[in-house]
Amino acid sequence: MTYSALSHLECPRCGARHDADLVQGTCPCGSPLLARYDPGQVAVSPRDIAGRPPDLWRYHELLPVRTPGRVVSLGEGMTPLIALPRLGRALGVPNLLMKDEGLIPTGTFKARGAAVGVSRAGELGVSAVAMPTNGNAGAAWSVYAARAGLRSLVVMPAAAPAITRAECAAAGAELYLVDGLIGDAGKLVAAAVARRRGYQDTSTLREPYRIEGKKTMGLEIAEQLGWRLPGVIVYPTGGGVGIIGIYKALRELLELGWVSGDLPRLVAVQAAGCAPIVRAFEAGATASEPWPDAKTVAFGIMVPNALGDFLILEALYATGGTAVSVTDDALLADQRAVARLEGSFICPEGAACVTAVRQLRKSGWLAETDEVVVLNTGTGLIYPDTVPAAAPVLPPSGSIPPDPRRADDARLGEWPRSPSSRARPPRSTGPG
Ligand SMILES: Cc1ncc(COP(=O)(O)O)c(C=O)c1O
Ligand SMILES: [Zn+2]
Image (cartoon, rainbow, N blue to C red; front, side, top):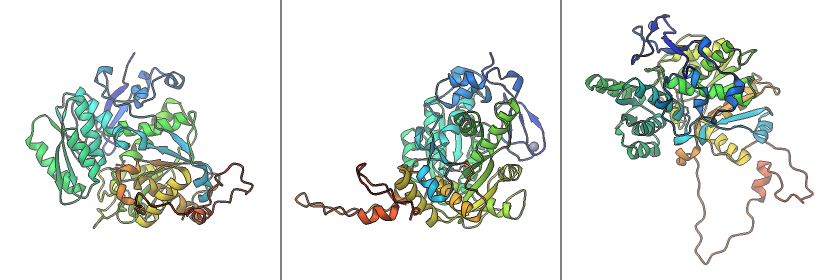
């Protein structure tokens, strides 16, 4: 039985075919390369997959690692797809679901790309991976490299979340900070890799396999819905690997006949302070212009100039999707709203998707009947400073004042605490 049905790499821009069993970067034309599989070699059915372990390697025929023994895993994948009924009702989209990537090793979906990218790099004989990052990817690639016995070189903006720096350091990465943005980090990495033997530049879309890990989010959404596709998928877009990967996954499932019907409308969400894809989409363009003076608290989506811009835009146009920008104030308010209404402390990037749903419902682009999946790409724990948490300090001899939250509860539209309460649950007035 063939473990991986990988056949070759293909350039989505010029159509050139490349050998998948050599270490490859981008196509000579400058485009990222995409892995292609031979459907005839996929000797598994959705029913067989249901019996496999609950991690992303359950889709190994559609992943690039050829030898089971080369798989480097920390148990990543099969994150929950949970209903958000109270938030959904408040937003006027009752069929709202969240794919929660906060529950994955390293706390972000970056673990998926790292698991597959590192496994394949090791299989192809690479001895060190090198990458610029906004923090989360660096943390994920550092720990997977450590588990694989590979070295890692990571460069991130000095302003990236501190915890990701700690994770890289703990895992033994060679770590540098740059007083600039991710593009500046990328230039430093490219120059270093050119001088070092055995190092591969694993920057976003500069190697072909990170996206294969991320596409498993799309495979899982389809499987978790019973091999059915939702109406809309909303994704916080930086370099765009996730949204391109989900689009690729869903097309592969259609080709295999595991799902049918229309693809979900894909929505790329960006921060108002860095929205090159939104600007390009609104202009009907097929490529984006670099965004000057990028700034947002949603650090992971602060990518002023994405290498895969044309692929992101193609996914939006081809599915009848759209692109939306949201302000930091609005996404931070929604980060708290999700925690209060649904009990999930999500990352600012995930919160941006919730704000996008709010806006798209208001504009009428989303209907009340739409089934909408938002991607929460990571846990809020990585960004502790995004939520003010002032609390009174009491002396040991002090006392706790009478219940101060009654008024607050009413404002939030919370359910009565006591099941014996005779009061009707108040209708939600929407998160504040
Ligand atoms: C938490 C989080 N969400 C979203 C993104 C954007 O990722 P993509 O490259 O898939 O657009 C990142 C990238 O750093 C991230 O860390
Ligand atoms: Zn090409």
